[in-house]
Length: 351
Image (cartoon, rainbow, N blue to C red):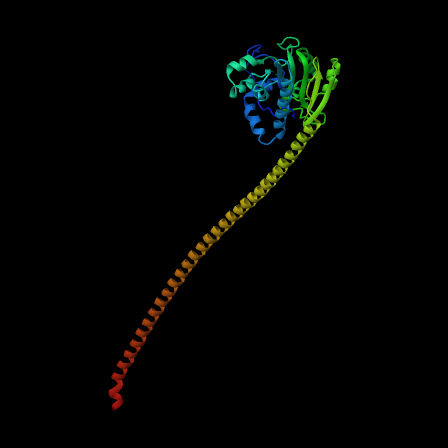
């Protein structure tokens, strides 16, 4: 990825002329934007909360167009090629002396412009067409044609033809805010991304492409003069301030992200400890329950034992009492027997 780090899901629409049949066969990377375009308006808004380069891009482009419009003798006609959800169209449409138009191959993306404009304006100013082939505009129709984060999604085999078409419809100059030479590109993002050598590509077409500076890290400004030369270029001091803003705020957000990740890691570790503690507590509770159950069994066994011993003692006591009774009876009988004998012999003893 890298360029359309500002777009997010495809399917553009919204203009009058050259609407392609939705079922037309296109390469998967172009089809991606047609199929997911409705999500990108919200995705841009989400990203603009923490990606300062999106704001810098809008400011520098709006300033660039305004500076050309105020010095133009007539209305400045501008084309936003790959306008998508209309992030730049919205800003440029408010500038005096600017007649801005848009072109995109994704109907679902273009339809998101209806969030900030009406159907009549959209139909009059934006065209939805094919991702490749001849553009539906006359030769030299525009004073300025620009792209932002678009060419990174153009297949290498289609690049030269597209740039030739952009040159054909331009009577002034072309401006690209596209991937800088040092920016890495994720080739698998959005079904395909490519970093192009624009100066070399334009050289093949017989045109000179200059890099006029960079206001934020991931993109550079490329410019090609076709006819009337540009009347404005950002001052180096302003580009330097933009770059510093981009770097400082990105560093700040980077530190916040690192702190957040650290906090999340600490929370995850604490959660694991709590989970482990709860698991150990459950094991202890099960052990205690087993011990209590065993204790209850022992108490029942002891109770049974005590009951048995008591019964045995009672039985023994009863047996002992019976023996004593029998012994007393024998003794008593013996005594009576002896008493009877004594009574019997006592007369004889007296004589």
